[in-house]
Image 1 (tube, rainbow, N blue to C red):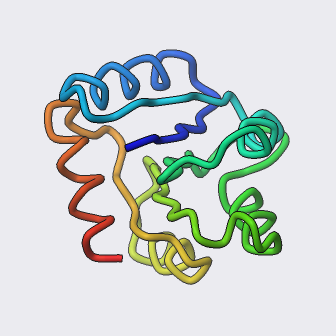
Image 2 (image 1 turned 90 degrees about the vertical axis):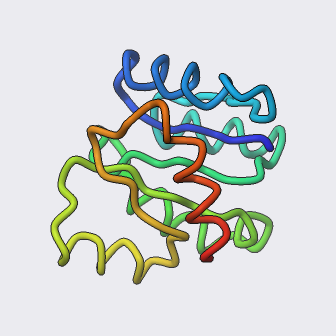
Length: 122
């Protein structure tokens, strides 16, 4: 499985990449923000996008809205990652068409299983 992880925090990107690639079946590309993510997406579509909610320049929901408006990206599931996992926030993100929401901080040891679970439910 190929995952694009979009987060403005270098440490979070590094930990997430390490956690997901531990099982040997997942390949992770990273992007530091919305514009970088769009560049990566134009080169190759991943199987899923893990998308931070709060980022400078272009937030996760803003990027998801852009993706929703482009037919070539509509089939790529998006899982949001956020520290602000209140019910209203989750409902808003799911309303944008998210496959799911993962709360931060997450458990690196179970992250791959959580992604699989959310993709299975989508």
